[in-house]
Image (cartoon, rainbow, N blue to C red; front, side):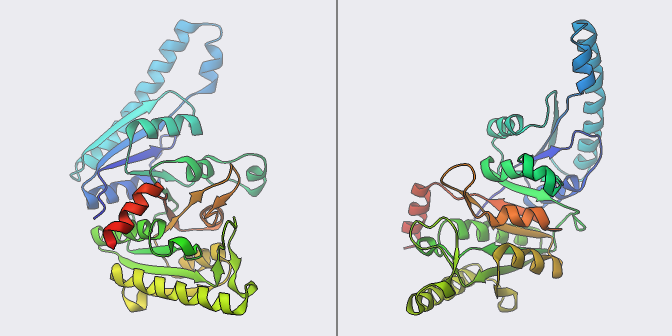
Amino acid sequence: MLQLKRILLIAPSEMTRTPAFGRAQSLALATGALLHIVAFDEVTPLEQAGLFDQDALAQARAGYLQIHRHWLEQQARFQRRAGLQVTCEVVWAKQSPAQVLAYVNDFQPDLVVKDVQHISLLDRTFHRPLDWLLLRDCPACLHLVTDARHPKPLKVLAAIDLSHLEELTYGLNEQILELASTLARTCDAQLHLLNVSNWSVMGDTVMSVPTQSLDSSLGEAVNDAQVEAFDALAERYDVEKNHQHVLTGVPHKVIRQFAGRNGFDMVVLGTAHRHGLDRMIGSTAESVLNHTSCSLMIVKPLPRPLIEAGQQAVR
């Protein structure tokens, strides 16, 4: 059984209580995990002033950090009253990918929680936003929170990918369901399972292709294998029959529309980065993130030796 013991909340630089605060608190309460809150803050005008007077910069920086620490400590105190074990820290640095990833690697959380960073399409064209880079490089499970109407999730959707024939029921799909079922159980939430069918990755293909484009006999065999794998996963994780969903269409569009239409508080899906910076198997996660109103829980694949060990254990 999966256990979440350390949750890291990346708070915004602004001293405001955002939806991620409520979601992190609810998940920590439900799982009994330690909650650590970190805020990255650096005031550019102060740094510019420091070019002329380093002593004045040091005093101004210390005073500003004291104010921010006091505010963050108030938030932690509020959450401790609810019975949580909470710690907090303010780091004088920009909330850059390098700073955030270094902090995550040092703290080694089981889960990183952060508010979704809303970036326009034009801005995404010219630079990669922090959320996208965390999708790619964050070693822990990553929860990107939108509005969090229900801080404690009531409906959880596990969106699996059965297009990779060599790992139909093991590896990433099992990790998705393991995390989704754990969260649903601890939060007393409904667990739903979704697969967007009629897609397949053949051989060394980087992207999924429609099974209709394959030879008819091969396409039929692929679809039969996916149905069998879906049923096996649903049974293994006790997903109720009326909570099992198999839909067709472009995966990221189907997931986004289905999750929004049915009021899910959290969508759990996987992403796997391969073959260079810009080729992400599971880029579905990025596409869903850019257009969804639902909070996303992102799961990364285990290293291959651990996957093979899990397969041997099941056999």
